[in-house]
Amino acid sequence: MKENKRLTDYDDLPLVLDVSDVQRIMGISRAGAYELVHSPGFPAFRSGRLIRVSKKAFFEWMEKGARSVPGDRKML
Image 1: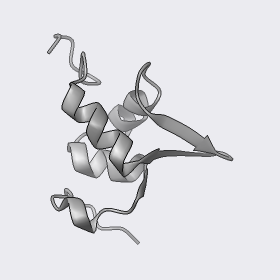
Image 2 (image 1 turned 90 degrees about the horizontal axis):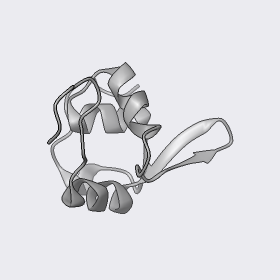
Image 3 (image 1 turned 60 degrees about the vertical axis):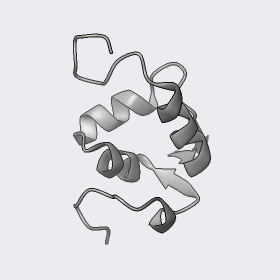
């Protein structure tokens, strides 16, 4: 079972992240993580019923900057 603490070390992350990994990295709620992975431009893909994102694509997406954070009404 995964820990509920925030992830802080890039090298300790798996190559392919799941929604709970995104949640822990971003420090957001489960609902916010699902909203994020379904947002346009987010590099998620499906593996059967599971939602996945490559670690590299996720961090490239973060470096580009997101237009808004799920649950936050203001634009970044």
